Every structure is written in structure tokens, then in C-alpha cells.
Amino acid sequence: MVKRIFISFIIWKALVYSFALIAVKLLPLQIAFTPYIFDIKTLEFPYLVFIWGNFDGNHYMEIARNGYHSLEHAFFPLYPILIKFLFEIFKLIDVYLPYLISAQIISNFAFLLSMFVIYKILTLDRQNGLFPLIVGCIILFPTSYSYGAAYNDSLFLLFATLTIYFARKRLFVLSSIMGALATLTRLNGLALVFVILIEYIMSGDNIIGQWSLKTVIQRMKNSLEIKKIVTQRIFSIFLVPVSFLSYLLYVHIWHGNWNLVFSSMEVWNQSKLTFPLQVFWRYLKIIFLSPAVNLNYWIAIFELLFVLFFIFVIVYSYKKIRLSYWVFFVVSIIIPSLTGTFAGMPRYALHLYPFFLGLSLFLSNRNIFFKTIYFIISAFLLFLFVGLFTRGYFVA
Figure 1 (cartoon, rainbow, N blue to C red):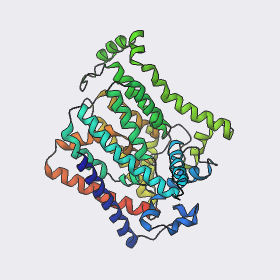
Figure 2 (cartoon, one colour):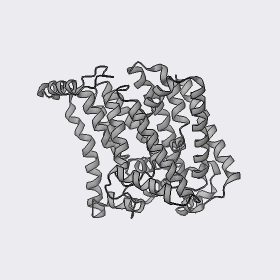
Figure 3 (cartoon, rainbow, N blue to C red):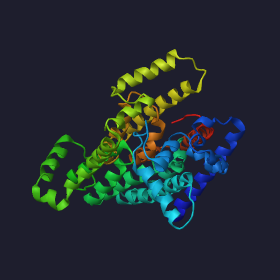
Figure 4 (cartoon, rainbow, N blue to C red):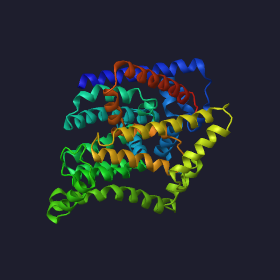
């Protein structure tokens, strides 16, 4: 298993780097969304290092370097804190570690650890045989390049999978701590409350398929005993929302208004709650009324297609995976869809072990021809997205 994970990691890195080098011959570099806009020295780095700090990576590194400034409060604090921490650790031993390198070390290391945790979860669920397929789905997913970039996706995946693992082991204090760390990494960490709560209510049984409302209500009644609540320490679940509230409190005290966390999303048109069907309608208008002559039009199409793909996996995995996994998956997709746009949606699946589990279950029941076609399409989209991202064109 260890060898398989490392080999898969090396193949993935080689593939992503190769795609990035090919893109140099195909697309001009747009400097505006690269780390150059914050630190001119980044152009002195080797190209295959420099390119992974594009777009949101700029903000995480700038927060690590100088703290929060205008419109940056939507970027949750744990990832930049770790970037700064690693930078300072190396500084103590008189080694200068650029923030860009620090960010990539954290991202790649977190991604590797996530693969080990996923294997442990599959072992608990007696689904070890799915591991090669689920790893293939993850590393060839069109936006998987973000796992190695200066983005917080791999860090969130690590904490989210650890939350699931410890909840499955009924270690609810550890699970809640991991959920709190996930929430300090991304807003949708709040959805992990459902994983912890449902695993507690359902008593740790193998509950795949046991989703009847009557069963859930009965188990809920049994789980509300004071003695059980105390012995299982499920009250620690409050660490998850408290971690989010603590970030709001920090912003309010040091920056004057807790609402900056939400109002700063306005630059991405994501500051207002919107009913998801309205968002679908907006995208349909874009597709049928806008000219198909610019990149934004095609990005909108990809965003809509990915959302439809997620919905398909949600429907397919109904009663095929654990209830806690499925609810986490659904809530995690609903949260960003309430912001009024599907921007970034192609990347949000990277955080969701239940999505890759459901997708792997679907593919495991298809013939070799179907699997081959799926992975060819996925690898082609990975090539396309890596090319756009590394050359400074927004993808997700």
C-alpha cells in the first residue's frame, strides 16, 4: 500500500509537470495572476516552482507574509499560518525557505498523508479493493493539480478524511478537533458536523443502506441518554462551529467587522445567499445568450457540467455509501451553490472523499472500455486545466 501510494504520487507529479511544460508551447503567460504581482523575486524561481503560486496562491502567501488586508478575509487562516510557521522553523536554523516553497511542501505532504488516511477508511469499511480505483480517480481528476499548488485543498482533504476516520473509530474528541482544523481551513468544514453527529447517532454500525427515517429516529432517541453523551464525549462536536466563530471574533477584534469574512467575497460575486435554482437559471442564460468567443463562456460551461456531474454521483451513491458520508457530500455541494455562482465548483470535489468513493463505486461496476474512456477524458481535462492554470488563465 505504501509503495502504491508513493508510485501514484510520483506518476501524478510527473504527469502534471509534463502538462505544464507542454502548455508553455501553446499559451502565452498572463503575468497578472501569478506571484509576480506580490513578489518580483518569484520570477527567479525555476518555472515548475513559480507556476504553482498563481491566483488564490498569491493571497495565501501574502497573508502568511504580511497578515490580512482588504478583501482577503474570505481566505481562512490555518493554511497561511502553517506556511508562516514552516518559514519561521527554517529561519531558526538559518535557512531561507521562500513562502512559495513552504506552501507547496505543506500541500504535497498533506496530499500524501490524505492517501494513507483514505486507505485506512476503506479498510474500516471493508472496501480495500477500491483503493487503486479511488486513487486513479483522485490523481486524474481535472483539477487535481491544486493538491500540489499553493492552495488549501489538500490540507482540507487531510483534515476532512481524518475527521471521518476518527468518527468511524468513535473517537469523537479527535474527530471534532480535526473537524475544527478543517473549518479553520475552509468554510465547508462546518459540514463535517453531520459526519460526526450521524456516526454517533448510528452507533458505528455498518449502516450502508439503513437509511429509513424510522431507524434514524429510533437511534437518535437512544443516543440522547446523558450517560452516553458523557462517555462518548460527543459534546466535543461544538469545537467545529466554535472554531468558525473564533475566526469571526478574530476578524471583528483586529479588523473591525466580522462581516468582512463574507463581504470580501463580493469581488467574486459570492457575498449574497442565492437559491441554487436561480444559479442554474443564470448559467443557462449565459450558455444560450452569451457569445461563445471568450474563455469565460467555456469556463461557465465547465462549471455547470461539473455541478451536474456531482449531482449524478450524489444520486448514484444514495444508499450505496454510509449515511454520514452522503450527507457530508450533499451539504458540501449545497454550501458553495448558495453563493450565487458555481465559480470554483470544479475544484470543490477535491475536498470530498465521499464524492471519490461514490465515483469509484460507479466505475467499479462498469466494463474496462467504459473505465478507459472515463480516464482518457479526465486526463485530457487535467491537461487542459493545468495548461490554463499555469499560464495564468482562470479555471477554478
